[in-house]
Every structure is written in C-alpha cells, then in structure tokens.
Length: 117
Image (cartoon, rainbow, N blue to C red; front, top):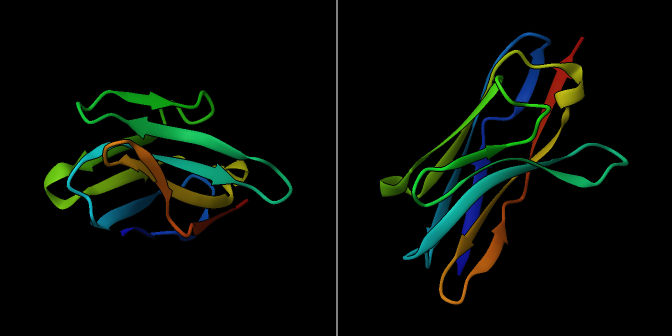
C-alpha cells in the first residue's frame, strides 16, 4: 500500500557530505511526519531527525549543526543533508513516515552510509 524508497547512501571520507532522499509512493494521500533513523552494527535504531507536516524539525544532539532535514510535500519526499560526516555516523539509515487515518508508521528498506577516517 505504501512504499518508502531511500537513496543517496554510500562511502565518504570523514568531513565529507552526503544527501539522502526518501520518496513515498502508493496510498500516500495523508502524510504526517517524516524522518530518519539510523542503526549501527550491534546497536539499537536511533532517531536522527524528524520533520512535521508543518515543517517543524527535531534533531538528535549528535547531529545538530551538521545534518539538515527537509521535505518536498508535492513530491512526497524527505531529504537528509549530512555535512561534516564523522566515522561514528556510519550506520544503515532508515526513512520513516506516519501516514493515513488512523496514522500508521511505515519504514524504508534502509541505505548504508559509511564514513571512513
């Protein structure tokens, strides 16, 4: 019914930048919040950033000042601009969105981000 497809992951050196994208398709007539989580090997999945339907943003302390989340509602797409990347940012990044009525949370398949030192 709803698919979230991430793109933009890859390998980058420390200090570099990457931009992740996530496009929602299917029954997406009512998208609420969108966001990004990440999961490093052996660790739990943690919040990175979220953006509400109205554009309010929230960031994990570890990425404040380096990452920027944005969305294009016309394209049902959320972005994560990641600057000044550090090796500890290495993880699988997952897109998520709450959609529909009643709201239901959907997840993408994840995209790998690897930051080399």
